[in-house]
Length: 184
Image (cartoon, rainbow, N blue to C red; front, side):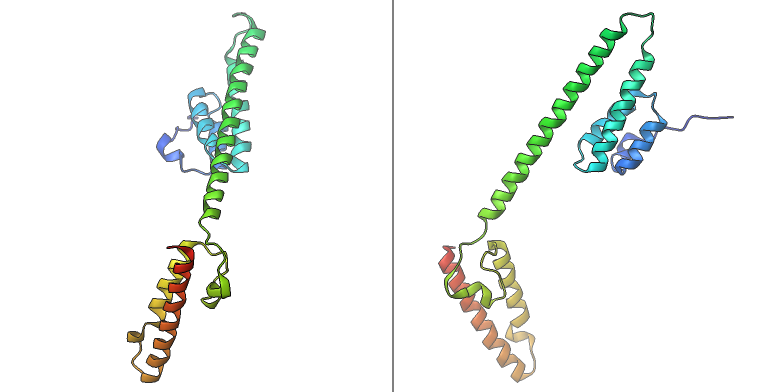
């Protein structure tokens, strides 16, 4: 006795890889509602596999709609034109989303570039092992790391404690100069 494969919960398939979603779509090619859901989910993903799978799911949707049309029930050409119009509208929406995603990525890159500190004189950042274009958050993280690593209270040996204290004070002075030249 052959039984149709059960349709999984839609919440659970959202986390599935794109290839597995395509397999599900091909298994349930007659379920246009599920195919629409899968196409929408694949449209949210920005990887080549998802885009390829979305094209195949769109083909399956088109095939299921053409199969549902009866040859005697109306004008097939008009139905095809309507379907093509729907698919073109979806393509335009996907292209608009892609342009919006590119714009957001560009804005994020610009924001990241603006967070970098201006170059400082005398190579202060290089003295604490950073590039001259290090962003402010990295300078702060490096300062915290220096404080943790070279705090004199971490060392019991008097010689090591003295070396750590010297390095700690030197690093604190460098970070003070960095913050004063960057306007923080």
